[in-house]
Length: 227
Image (cartoon, rainbow, N blue to C red; front, side, top):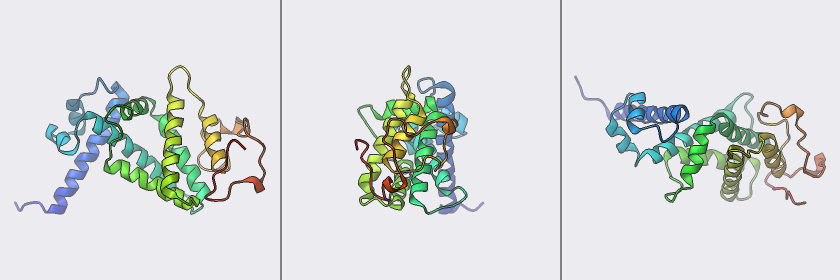
């Protein structure tokens, strides 16, 4: 039997890594982080235990990569869904809705993730996180940001804050209120993106001054919520 080519080996390694990440998402959502072991993950993924050490520094790094993979996948699907568009406001609305949807659709996983990144080791850079960052930066470029890198960092912070607010045990904020805050800030139409269930009965103007078409922030301009 002839040896496998480098490209075949690389494809196999990539699939093995993907299986580990998917297994992590599934098991943490089913059992919680503490009750999920690396042995559980490798067994679910059908991979050798040594592969975890090869790809990741530990379980926390594996978790962060798994969550970033999930978020990047959801974001990419939202941006590329039909009808395809190059409208910057629509793309930003889709991005915000996709990220809020991850938090509401994967509560246990996202609570664990937010707790993880607040630990001393902090935010872990990985290919999945870089892909997520790239997609968000490109969205800010389409929206018309004068400084896409700065606007990406601000958007990331706002989305993380919204996630914490929605997931706070005992005192969660409703997704519609947080969505209204973000949409108001970026001058987005309430019907844009993929509104969550119940949006039809929510008044997005509550808590904000009335707006007209002429008042909307132009692409790239961020409205001041204090005005």
